[in-house]
Length: 63
Image 1 (spheres, rainbow, N blue to C red):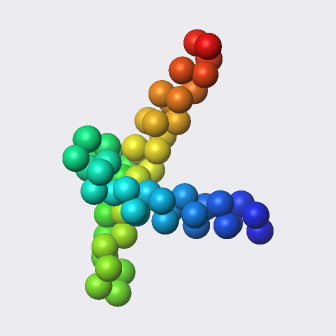
Image 2: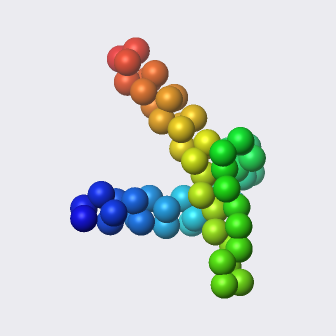
């Protein structure tokens, strides 16, 4: 149940910063999903999240 709460919170954060991520090139990677549900646009950045995770892992591994 805790992982579901974390997943929902992450999606809310990504939706909030979707415009900022798009301006910096993160919202247009393969795997980033953008669709409309009940008149509201939903942004699920799977590809961008994976890229940011790999960058953070590389930085952590170097240190």
